[in-house]
Each structure stands twice: as structure tokens, then as C-alpha cells.
Image (cartoon, rainbow, N blue to C red; front, side, top):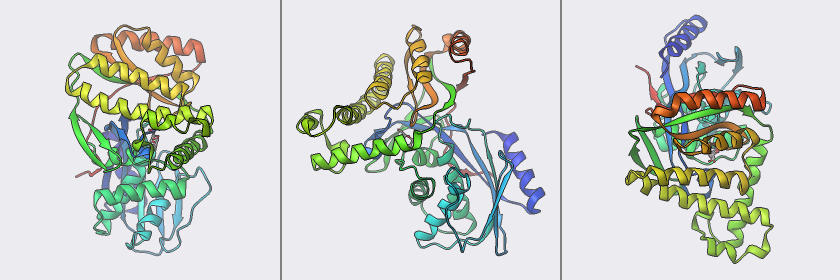
Length: 382
Ligand code: GAF
């Protein structure tokens, strides 16, 4: 957690509201493997990171609430008695959506003041949105003694994203951000919403992120479209979710769907299998197999699920040319953001230099390279 950022947010709050806030840290996440499987009731392998959202909150004891986004130097005012969505793309929807969903759950919040800021690079696919939602629900739960469990809180965050932000996301991001464990990744079963923690110690290898620094538009609608395809095919198969289908099952309805939709469903079934195999590989310390599964995941995301983009594909191709990288793939929803790379520690510095140069030459823009540090989930800052 970035202590300079904590001081900055706390100071901004005290200057604006002249009282002492409660402070919450809510992390972003990485995902080792298992992409677009969460809303298919499948397996994912995320971990919370040391970058996230810091939120400062206190009761306002008036008829209005004020929320201030320090990073955008922007403030909204509202009353908790009259919550409605703002214009699409407005950051306020993450805050208002959470309040609306808390109220739908039958809990009462009073008006409050809030300042928040973060250090998750925007559009990086590390889920600043789930971090923000979780920081709000967690902060309000503390402030107003709502008695919500962490599991109830992540479903409130998810519904805020569905109903106010308009992205029909799965539960991976909110879960990882809320339940993260320092130095661990979580093999999460998105049906039972239970996770098995794995200590991440790759000895001579590490996880490295490379941010394309691009976020192509259409990503939200493309995301929702993919989800609809999965639900349509599940219906045809008469199952709850693609988690319940095998490749052979899918074959039985092949003539009833387009080839592109068939490939999307096939990707989900195969990705779910890869996530399970990855956990076995990690348990056995078999990094070569883990790396191959990660490359396989990217191949499917690129060619079958079609959620990659030129910049991500370029970075994965560069990784493949490097003998010290065991696996690389796009991470998160797609259409931009980061790749995640499993790389030998001694090769990090050289690859960072060569890939940065190659990326700049190709796209005339800089990529950014981050080391990954795994953190605890959403918590109060004492
Ligand atoms: C986004 C969503 F928010 C997640 O729920 C998940 O579906 C992910 O894309 C793809 O795996 O981050």
C-alpha cells in the first residue's frame, strides 16, 4: 500500500471536511489464469495487489453527502434519500450504485463525506472499479454499522457494477479485492464462491505485468455481448452455466449456433480446464506446464473469444521469442490493459528494456512494466 497516497487522501479529507475520517484500503487484482470463466460459474486464479484505492469517509450529519475523486479533482453532491444513476461513464456511478444496492439489501445509510484516490493505472485491467466499489461498501459498513458480511459486500459491489455502471461482470474482481491474502493467489470456484489460497513463490521466476497503456472503446458492450453468448449456449444445452458443459456436450448443438459463438463457448470450457490444470501445476511446482497453460489462455482469448487487441498480441509474441519467459497472456476483460508474464528473475531487466523499445517502435507509445506484489484484501487503515 502506498503510504504517501494515504497521507495525501487523509490531508485532502481533513482540509475539505475538517474532521478525522475512517480510512480504507481496497486493492486491485491480477489474474494468473481463468479469464471470462467467472460469469460461467467456473474457476479463476486471481490475487490482490499492493496498488488500489484509498478512501477516507465520515458521517456528514447533514442532509447531503459529498464524494470527491482526488485524482480527477471532481466532486459530486447528493442525498442518500434520492439515489439515481448519473450519466454513463461517470465515476459517481460506482459510489451511487453501491449506496443503491445497500439500500436494496434493506440497510439504512445516512449521509456521509468521502475523498478517494488510487494508484491503479487507469485502464490497466487491474480492476480499479471493483476496488472503488469495495472501498465504498466496506467503508459504509463500518461507518453505519450495517452488519454486512464480506460476501454480502462483494455481491453489493457486483450489482452496483451491473445496475449503475452497466457492465455485467462476474464476481472475480470484487472477490479478489475483498478477500486477497498477502503473498497468495486464490483459486476461486465462482459457483460456490469459495477459494483455495496458494502461496506464490516461484523461486527463480516472478510475475511481471506489462501495461499496453491502451484501452479500446467498445470493451463494455463487447463484454456484455460475450456474456449473452455464453448464456444463450447454456440455455441450448439446458444447463445453468458453461461450467457444466464438456467439449462433447457442446458438439451436440454445434449445428444450432454460429461458428464464432461455438468457438467462444469452446474457449470458456477449455479455459476452465486450464485454470484447474494450472492449480495442479502450481501444486507440483511445474512452472513449465503453468507457462504453457498461460500461453494457451492467450491463444484462446485472441482467436476464439476475440477479446485481445494488436498491442496485447504484440507483447505476448515478444514474450514467446524470449526463452526465459515461460508464459504470457492478456489479463482481465481485454481490448487493452496488461499482459501478465511468468519470467525468470534474471531476465527481467533485459526484457524490460527490449520490449519497451520494440513496443515504442511499433505503436509509437510507451508501455509500462510493473513488478507484482501480492497484498491483503480490503481493510481499514489503522
Ligand atoms: C472483468 C470482469 F469484471 C470480471 O468479472 C471477469 O469477467 C474478467 O473481466 C474477465 O475474466 O475484469
